[in-house]
Length: 118
Image 1 (cartoon, one colour):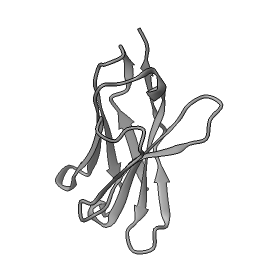
Image 2 (cartoon, rainbow, N blue to C red; image 1 turned 120 degrees about the vertical axis):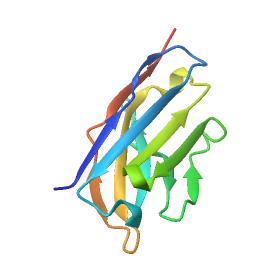
Image 3 (cartoon, helix red, strand yellow; image 1 turned 90 degrees about the horizontal axis):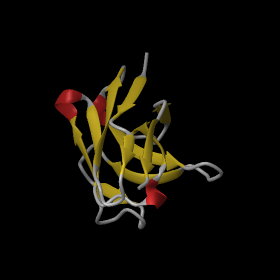
């Protein structure tokens, strides 16, 4: 059974940092593109960052230079390091997994809340 479990969210002041983790099970992790998405109330879910099995990364313009996505295949985990957080970053953050060959969506995590507020 495929499972993605996010952790690391919480309440942080503007300018602060958080590190999100997504632990995967039930897939051959190294063969999947992993992504972080977020959804704020009343808004559509949007791509934040993605990383391929080969380590190539992609970021939304709004987070470029502040967020870093990485993966540890030995731990079946993808991370999102978030620095210089802004109130606009407030959202539920989700990870997902897509098979590298077909780009077929395999799973979504349940999400972790990130709130940036003074």
